[in-house]
Image (cartoon, rainbow, N blue to C red; front, side):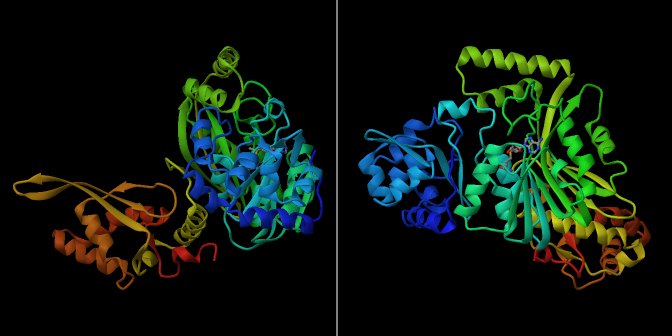
Length: 497
Ligand SMILES: C[S@@+](CC[C@H](N)C(=O)[O-])C[C@H]1O[C@@H](n2cnc3c(N)ncnc32)[C@H](O)[C@@H]1O
């Protein structure tokens, strides 16, 4: 049980850890760019080797990150004679004879320090109410979130409070909810640990405790696994297939201000003979929101089941065989052939709403929130700009645009065989471009009107200008939607400014 002292008391802990280099940079330098797995089994020998010198940071990493036991004198010299008993009093560590063990994991994430459950502890690993640490889905949502200043943010399913704490930096007030009282205990501790007092914590199911409230931003990293049973609150919703995500999508608009955004991570089922886009489209119908789904990956049912069992079940081969069979039987009963994973953003907006689906394979990088915000602005611009007006625009190639060419040797020279454009910031979004489009894009420097550039191209090609204009306009619109081309009024840096 965690005891939450005042933030003054916890300031000493933060200071001590920081001085020892126990922050993101320090851990990166010590452990390398390894993503710390929830289960250390296979990595442990290497991590022990990296922390073998017994310096202060080595001891703190073993104690608070890896969940290993250290001696009392090691703990005392790393934390100090006053802080060691204080940590025990707050429920962070326990002492048995000469052995000191941490009861929680302390995870540095960006400028935050977060107490979360230590999944190495067997009694924790089995708990339904275990509180998740910083996982890939946490990072995805953090990167995806729009960071423009807002009045109010809701973090639904806050867990240890990570998204709420990040949102506090650009929100006047933040509400964070969770159905799991233990999660709120950790979140409460973390608010003090990070000295943030503008977050209101509420226990409850989904939007149930929020009746009548409205927010400019709602972020949700829900229990998104499509799983056979509710085993962990952080992973399973207890609802069939992706019904939990669907209810959030259907209920959220009522809690959004006009112009407000919902951003969430989600997994959704793909069934035989069904286009997943059609099914998701029905979730958004009549929502009063624009909706944009970015699909990062797709796994067949057997791989999906295998990865969840491997990554989240602390069991031996026999039990994991039984659990895997349970997952597979469930997915087969639900006729689920594959599961897609991605992120979703909805914006409440009066008028005619749009829906968009994109494939963005790979990671959602740190610049994605800015790219998403720009995407909405570009869409607004294009919807309110007729073709005639667009032809008078002076478009610029985004400073993030990159051309990647592949060439083969041909008669003593290099000959380009394929060329792609992509953005250096934001999710992977690539498109093939031929030599004419490459030339046109290079000339888009914001000085000439689009019509003049297209007429110039028509002359070069010996084709009627109207024909080139008619063919080029849909392409230009598509490139703008994807953030490759920008009107004078917009720069990639405008977003989240
Ligand atoms: C995947 S974890 C996300 C934790 C944290 N927000 C993050 O991004 O790392 C999902 C959280 O949702 C909470 N949760 C599960 N079902 C819920 C429900 N019906 N209503 C509210 N919260 C719920 C879980 O307890 C858990 O803390």
